[in-house]
Length: 263
Image (tube, rainbow, N blue to C red):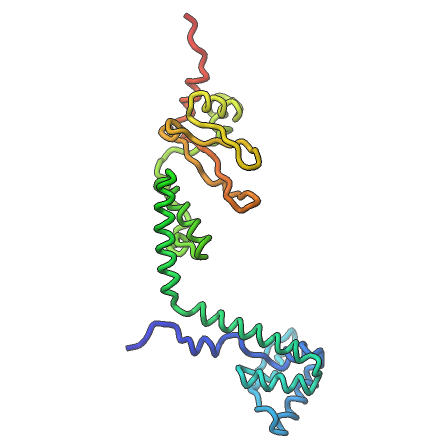
């Protein structure tokens, strides 16, 4: 039965652990034709194996290069550099280590990671429970759990599922105090916030820098108050959240600001 898993051997063969004579010339700061002559001389003497030849594109016309692949290629290229410029040998070894690291990454990325999938599933479940314990519900709980999972595991579950937007659990628009004040008759955001505090729909709090922000009370949540991410972050990486309100709050504000009738 044929396997649907990636061919890891082929992945290793096709990864970046290869170097050509032009790259060697750049590393040792020599002309490419001089490097090629050295290679040909060492091959004739039987000191290195004859490398394969490939054409690479340039701005003018293709250039033929010798290609060194794998452990044999690494050995032969070190001999070549030792012949050309021994003091550049360390530079060549460093370059091979970079290529080997790139190869390991490519193969690892193609290897099925059931352990990561399990870790992601467990982390998502734990943080979803924590979000609900913190008073979040519906989309807000799911978004918070997804964010925590992405930070801890490097995997964004919602993004993997192709979910970039989530339908709001309500059809009413969510408004800022500025928008509420404008709709309620041209009042300022400060006036709206003061009013919402007066009728006990929200409470003012201070963050660790002393900046004022607002959180909804139980009555405020019932009236449509929702904490939302602004898309911005504090300097420590914590998302900045803002209290917004269902558009039905506009009538509440209008009624509260309407003067009492004179008896």
